[in-house]
Image (cartoon, rainbow, N blue to C red; front, side, top):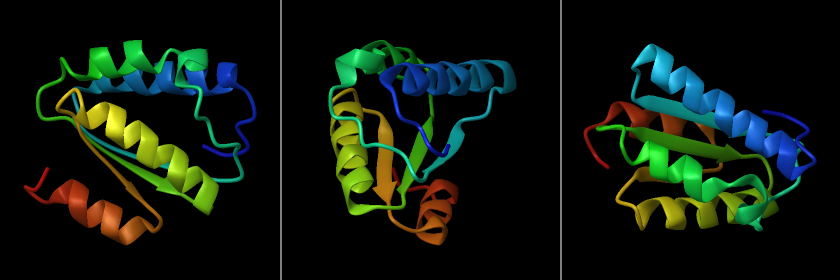
Length: 107
């Protein structure tokens, strides 16, 4: 995802990811975000509902990649909220460690 500016764009992106997970049955998701504004007010894009639905997807692992320190902090916040729901989310700054983690057995 690139150049996301508004909570509405973030919500639309999250809904598209949920739809793809539902349709495909896949349980590994790599999300790379670049040139976007960090989002800390998660209620603006209904993250709670997204995470609640993801919590029903057994074996789901989500890796978040950020291209800036500010986005990385935002992703770390999302990771914290996801882990509170026992979801396997991790934030990364580079692609290869994220891919390695997604393909590993670790959560």
